Image 1 (cartoon, rainbow, N blue to C red):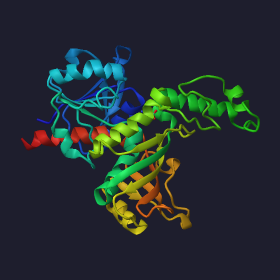
Image 2 (cartoon, rainbow, N blue to C red; image 1 turned 135 degrees about the vertical axis):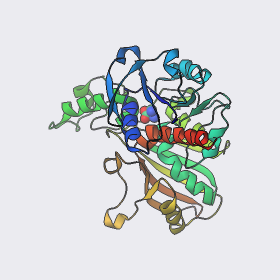
Image 3 (tube, protein in one colour; image 1 turned 60 degrees about the vertical axis):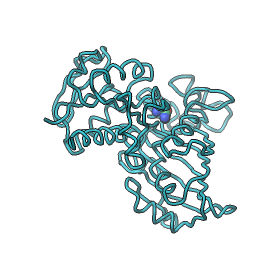
Image 4 (cartoon, rainbow, N blue to C red; image 1 turned 90 degrees about the vertical axis):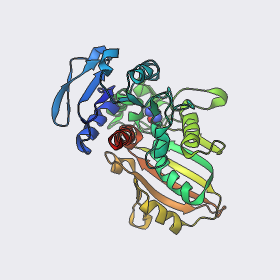
Length: 349
Ligand code: 2RA
C-alpha cells in the first residue's frame, strides 16, 4: 500500500503551508496523520480536500507511520524525533536539533539528494529557511564554477519567526499606518513599544538581528547559514560571512550574495546556469524593471535570482540577489521533497 505520513506540528505557520503543499503535489501518500500538541488535539484541518482530526503527540501516534515530518521547537524535536525513528518512521526534521549532527544528513533534493540515504539515526534534517532561500542557486553555481568564498546579507520576513512574528508585524503596521512617524529618533519605537518576537520595532524599520546571541557577537541565525551551507555543499572549510537582518515583509526571505569562485566568471555563463537549474528561476532584466522581490514571489516554489553582476574588482566573483518563500522552499516544500525522496526509495524496493 501507499506509505503513511505523519505531520508533526500541523497547526503552526509551516504546518499550515505543508497541508496546502500536500494537497497540491502528486498524491503519493496513503494515510496522512496530523499530530500536534495536546492543546490542538481534536481540531479538524483540511488536507487533500478532506477533514482530518489532529491527534496529540504521543508514542502511539507513530504506530504504522513510514515517514514523519516534524516542524516543532528544537527541544520537542530533540525528544520526539528519536522516538518516532525507534518506532520505524523515517523522520524529516525541520528544527535546529539535528542539522549539524554528523550522523544526520542535511538535505536539499536539488543539491545533495544522495545524502538522504545515509541516515544511521533514521533522521534527515531540513535546513534553516535562510540557508534554503539561497542554497539551490548557490549549489548550481558551485557545481559549475567551484565556490571559494561567500559574503551574504539577509532580508528576512516576519513569518520566519512563525505566526507570532506575522501577528506582531501586522499589529505594528496597524499602529504606524497613516501616521507621520519615522522622522524623529525613537518615535517609531515609542509608538510600537516592546512586543512580539523581534528585538526592535519592525514596522517602518529593519532589525539587524535574527535568532539568539552567540559567541563574539554572531547570531545563531548567522552561524546556521554558515555551518549548514558548508555541510550541504560538502565544503567544510568554505569561508562564509553572514549578516542576518529582519525586514517588514510578511513572507519571503531575500539575500544579497557576494560569491567568489575558483574560475573567472561571466554574467552570461551564470545566467545560462541559473536559467536551466532545476528549482531556480532567473529574473534579471533590470532595464525592464525585472528583478525578484519578496512581494512578487511569495506563494511560489522556486528560488528566484536577479541583479547578477560580475564583481567590479574581481573577475572570479559575482554579486546577486536571491528571493524565495521561506515557508515553502524555505521549510514545508523542501521537507515534502525530502519525504518524497524517501517514499521513492521504498517504492523502488
Ligand atoms: C527566521 N530562519 O527566519 C529563522 C527561523 N526559521 O526567523
